[in-house]
Image 1 (cartoon, rainbow, N blue to C red):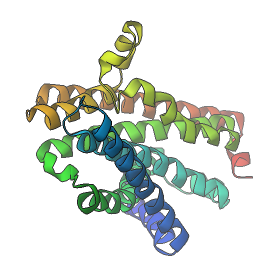
Image 2: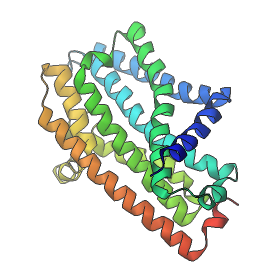
Image 3: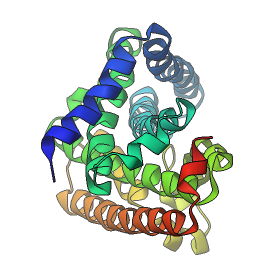
Length: 263
């Protein structure tokens, strides 16, 4: 693996973002709107419900972490789609760059795009709603690692679909996380789900991540076993995503459709 090539691929996307104010604005706008929306909704719940003592803190913290997951997945997809839209897709695969180097570069750069959107939104929540996810301390790092690995995995699966089916598959990039959100138990405990769905939900790292988030905020305790389980599940899905991506790439290469994707 050539780290100079990986750095060059990362730098291309950094310069692309740096030189475009609309792109930067787009990265910051949606997470900020999410914070305002869920901040006011959870504030309303605080006035009308006694389920959580700190409804604003719990729901808004969950919203911030979910947006981190969403942005990490979408950022990965968007960088891949940028290559298609700019008609650079064919050049990317003609160049002497390994698939592993492309995956690594996109994975590294996705965190850069994600943090551009997340940090302003997380900082706005502190003075506006008195909620700071940074109060979670060290466990926050591990929760975000698990979320990021799973977000990149979803990005890998969507880009594999783009390789297999072409740009028409890009709508799935926006729908994938919305499809999983109900099973992720982001804003409510897993007990809310029907029994037959609870077993399915536990196969996702999201349930373990957000259950642990609520455990920390409500009980002020940390269950590192739950965090380890979430990271382990995320890594297993990531390996699966890499395998699917390679299969899609070699399948497209065998069919000769790679050259047509960017057209």
